[in-house]
Length: 235
Image 1: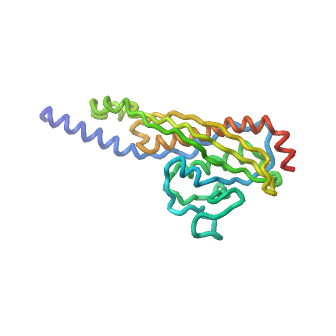
Image 2: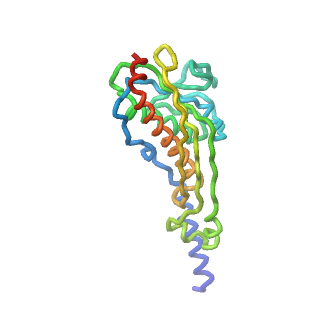
Image 3: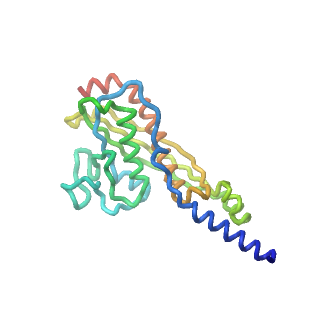
């Protein structure tokens, strides 16, 4: 076989490997925090401000309502916490083209039920998650090397580019009469590398989710700090 043909075959094989692996999805369990507050609040219902996350991520919804909202089938609805703020559970699927928004709902529900509240207690109120300002930027400094090496090193795991996400995370806690009990605002940070096996979108998704989780970690520490005050107001 001619040398030129060998090179061509190698390029095709490498392209096939990258193409087959670049669509690998991030597993949801990747975003599950294992840090539980020492003092758990009574059970709170989870709500998410979907429009605030759409603004942060520059996303558009298919239909801005959750799949279990049968009473309001036509889109944005007024709730005690603003338009498009929906109650979510571990079974809720939001109608959105942006996976990072569904990730945010899943992260909230898991963290509240596993790490912030005791789900076996009497319901004492609601917890609302909102997104504020965001800084999100891709760094392509490795792209020239990827092109120069025809993607060979990328197929073996070399970084193709990176994404830095810094997200303002806002958490509000209300009692059962919708009185504001506490409000916290922190910034979460994450920098993630993109390799061939993650794909162009998935590494940005991972950065967004882990930035949210980082912000929630800081807020959980504040909730634990103010536990006595919050717990007293929820009773």
